[in-house]
Image: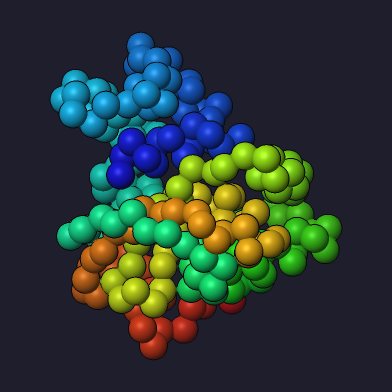
Length: 201
């Protein structure tokens, strides 16, 4: 998961600058991600160190109270899946999706011309154009029930799919499976029967 997470972030215009800086500060090269070898113990330790500094892995920042994952699967997605995929409960994504945490709703807000916290929407439009001739890396999701899936990596890419969900057909995701008790500690909204309601809304 760590290698795929870093691949996705290094391909992101939003995060690749800070990630590049961390890689350079550690005296490493981006090839450890783009051409990573998960059988190489030293590389794995180096990538773990990058993740610690970049995203607080395994127990701070995005990964505070992160659930124990019993299994990872590499699964094909289709356009219907987008209705069951949600953003993390984070201010920017909450506002962008009008409190729904849904990529399709975020795409509507973007198309309306509204910008959140003065953050330009242009990268989403650029990504939409890029997707016409290129493939995105797989997104990373977690679930405890196969009904609600929480984005761990790939928020911007999922937002771009929100413009045209049919583009999700034939794409893939890494999906981590956890228990309800573990998910409750991380994001209770992902439990069956829980209202997907963000902190503000």
